[in-house]
Length: 420
Image 1 (tube, rainbow, N blue to C red):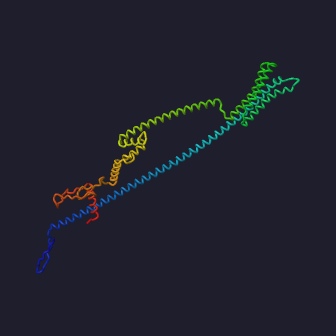
Image 2 (cartoon, helix red, strand yellow):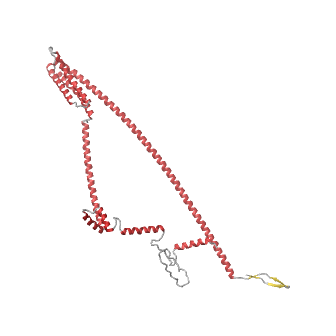
Image 3 (cartoon, one colour):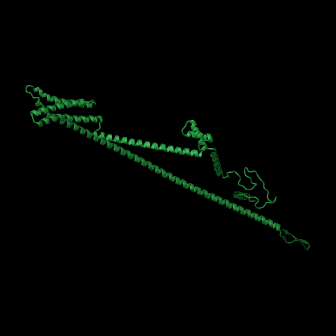
């Protein structure tokens, strides 16, 4: 505070210099205002720095997340590109493999076709040669056998008998041609061949009889063999043609077929034995598993098992089937198997714990405050006055660490919003 004194000098009033007086209350108030202003400024500065740091941290976190997202997107794009290229390469490889397989199959089919055609040509050529050789051999044998037969029927007074050998040899030839026609028309040919063999044996007998009387033994045997060999070789040719037409197997093929059939029968018998053994083992295992299951059910669910046994007997079942067990469980527990009142209560409690963990709240739904003046949602308020009424002392009210952190954050936000 200041004071101004007035003095009279030469009859005039003159104001003297002001005098300052020390006022401790005003000084204290000024110091308090200055301290409060400095505190508020410091609080604003701290809040601004905290906000700036928070924004910087948020920006850095967003930038980091953006970088991670970009890196993940780039990596995912690279993976997708690599997978696309791999799929394309795999598709090309499969297509090339399929084309190569088709080409190889076509080439193999063409080679098989050429081989088949070549084999058919060789078979046809061999058949033609075999037919020509058989026919020529028949002619040679007829030329060899005819002179002795003609000599046997020679009679100067009956020259016409000399045609009998021609009738025998020609008849055999005609009958064999009839057999060939029957083969071509898929008709029975055995009687044609039988007649041909009969005529051949008659001619052979004439050659043998006349050769031994008029000539020597060699001539008789040779001409008799010629009479049989010619028709016989031709009949072999026809026999082979008949078997080829009918698709008959050779002796070796039939033997191999019988052997394969025997091996297949043995394999099937062994397979049946194996299946029977596996079935028996499976039945034994199923029976053992059923007994173990019955024992476990009787031990773990004695009431349900006792009722199930009575229910099975009432229904005419020799064992406790699944249907009987299900019905007995519903009768006793009121639910299907694997459910009960205890299990349902346990599941509900577990679901409540999971829901409380997701919502970040206590399981019993009580308040996190420990003070009596901050009650929970369902807890009735109970006021406990301090030791001295009207006087609050340190430690009267206790807060949890979470409540203290929330109060500090609220105070800082209030100071930042209201600098006055």
